[in-house]
Length: 186
Image (cartoon, rainbow, N blue to C red; front, side, top):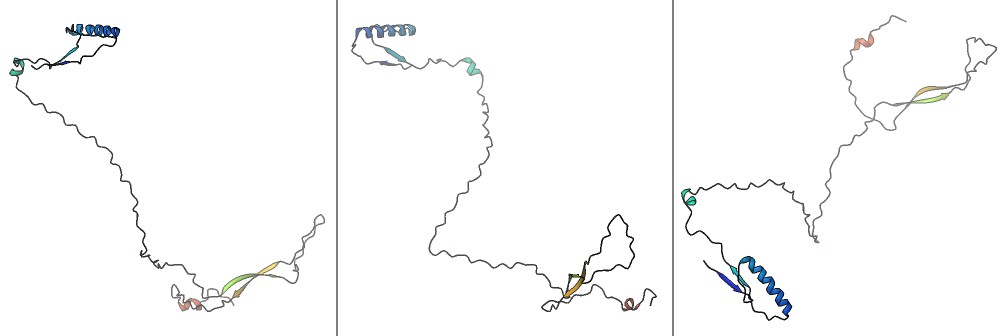
């Protein structure tokens, strides 16, 4: 058993009152530990705890059993997504400039009709319209006088350019249908 004894360095007391207070506090402290410090030096004793010299019969009788220690299982943590880092491209004098690629796109083109376009034109009658039917005129109210009204007529407008469009017929029309008369008149 090894014992380590340390002695504090001697200090010259400056004040008698402080020396008395210090010795009184040390005496009180060492009385609790059962240490005699009558010479005025404080002694600190450091030693390991006393171990039994012989192994106890309780430890000898039981065989040593290895208890499996549970291994800590790591808790799955959410994996952070990688942050995209912008790539800096150095700009030099000889960078090839990409040329625009010509892309053909289909556009709907209006197909001109092969026949002339019809248009409605309003024509005013130059003469007032006369009634051939006799109208009974009551005394208490006025009779509306007919006014000349516009008449619509269809005018064919030719296109300024020829339109050669071949329009196929959906089915062949038999010739006897045209020659056959449905009604026996005139």
